[in-house]
Length: 175
Image 1 (cartoon, rainbow, N blue to C red):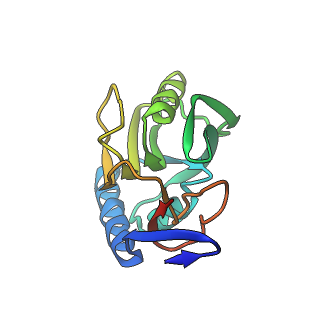
Image 2 (cartoon, rainbow, N blue to C red; image 1 turned 90 degrees about the horizontal axis):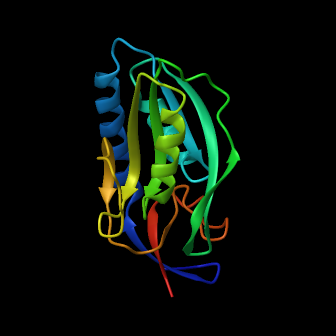
């Protein structure tokens, strides 16, 4: 598919995304029947996934956002910068991190360590996309929407230089 000069190949349809997001919401609703978790979305990429996920939940929750940067164009810079911190007090609370994609693992490692320092009761990591072939993690992920190969992807919140986030499906960016 050609879109505004970009060549894109759909790899996950809008219907498949919504079906899987409903399943993840159901799992989280079952996990937190007696507690009120705080969902922390990693901006900017997680905003669509988090909005849909929260709409499908059957439990009460709180939400907040954090903004980190580790990418420029299609590649990782190798360092994580904190651009916006959370405002919620997460001490002794259940935290659910909402990521759009876990690629190298650098950002999620940084974020988990940072939030762990605030002494939450638990941290649950939920990601829409995971690239197991390239991720280097020192801990397991709790909930994964889809495992994908190490291609550069856009759509459903994921961008290429701040563009293409608004697309409703996930596309591989072709060269």
